[in-house]
Image (cartoon, rainbow, N blue to C red; front, side, top):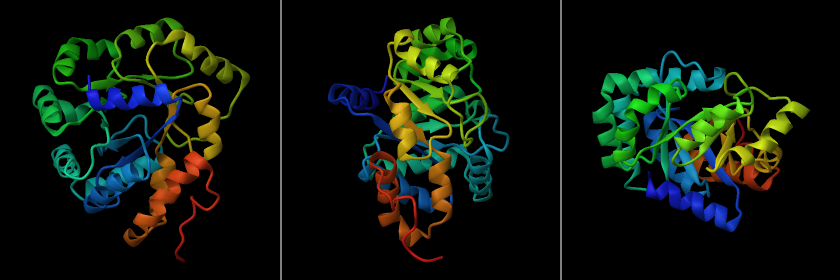
Amino acid sequence: MSERLQRVLNNLRQSKTKALSVFTMAGYPTPEATLEIVPLLARAGVDFVELGIPFSDPIADGPIIQAAAHRALQHGTTLHRVLQMIEQLRRQTDIPLLLMGYANPVWQFGLEPFAETCRRLQVDGIILPDLPLEEYRPYQSLFQATDLDVIHLIAPNTPEHRIRTIDRHSTAFIYCTTHTGVTGRNPRSSARMTAFFSQLSNWVTHPVMIGFGVKSHRDFVYYSQFADGVIVGSAFLQFLQSLKPDDYPSAIPRFVRAIRHADPEGMEPKTPR
């Protein structure tokens, strides 16, 4: 278990503050940009950052994250390079860092070397959407021994009994998607969805973060009433598309304010295009 991540989650719960996590793709729009973007997110008040591992065949990513991964791969952003970025980032920020990607690059790297490297570099957690609980459990002791939290996903169609099982095997938080399907979609709220979210606190003991399609302050407020916070991904990557690197120091904090505090100008770049 990551003490850094646990401390942040505990402090948020004690202060009754909703968490905001932002996903950004490592190597997008360039590897150099990642080394600037993550510290800016930390200074802007994001509670933890998810750093995407580019992969050529994602199953959970919509077109925006797929395009970002493709561009990062064109820049030669391998898992080895992502870990090198984290080593550099740890000289700049102490924010909890979670890697999000797919099992294939991790298995190609070697699971034990990967876990040990993550411990050395102070990676706090890993999210692998294509690693179901049943395939994770044989390696659970390895992840625990290296203080690496494995974050499991649930969706509105996940049965209660499975959610309770996932909760028993979780060590940090549970990632709940707003819908079944890929990232970036605009989920339609329904009575059934609201009923599902309303029951989550009765089924789990760990914090819950809601993601997939969270794009605005309105979404932040809506989903936070059911969970401990939200995760923003596609909206942030789409925002980066409109920026030049010189815009980052002012634009990224505005984006964070727009999500958390409804800054009316936060989602718009300030310089003409």
